[in-house]
Image (cartoon, rainbow, N blue to C red; front, side, top):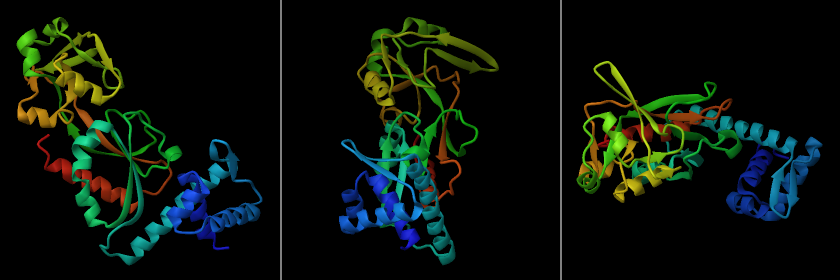
Length: 297
């Protein structure tokens, strides 16, 4: 049995969720995939997969083998790429996790340029405002915003955006424009309930700090909800410039209290701990940096 081929087959089965889906991905017959897994389990002397009405799941031994096998495959690919020492296009599958709104506004619109550079590369992008477990989900890289909780993660800050107090002209025409942070107590505020949001905002100017506690009838748990509520003239919000970049440039949204500063929002490229950072992940991060370098935001 070809050990590397067996590992690639097993990883494909785990990630695809079935023998048939893995067979399609590998361009093999399903009997060949089933036979490869059976031989692998026999050689290892351990059960790796369990079948149930809900599909395939890994055993404890299978999960450990998956993590090591995926790492070995990635390192083999990196070794081949390093040996070639060429600028040839990347290939295989890249799995990315990113926040919904940021990816929709700043990554997906230009993604075709990246794919055109690497015609043999496939990309799975998981859009989620939550911080998922990269190893458990099999991700190669994640784009995360704010402060990183886990200092053990392999991460690199790639950009930063100012936070702004924003609202629509229609809202300000009806409710008035706040002149100081304290004026926000009289306004309807869209509260972001995820980490980095909340009802307490810290402003600073000329070395002076002012903390304001706001309130509002609308609370949302995703950035898309903040955008929809603000654009619907329901109130104002604190948001990164990235979140409303198109509307700010078009005048559909207005920033106020601009002589005060709020803590900026940092964008990080986060990689699974204990795994080699792949050339595919590095190339994707470089692409995001390139996109942001020419973005009005």
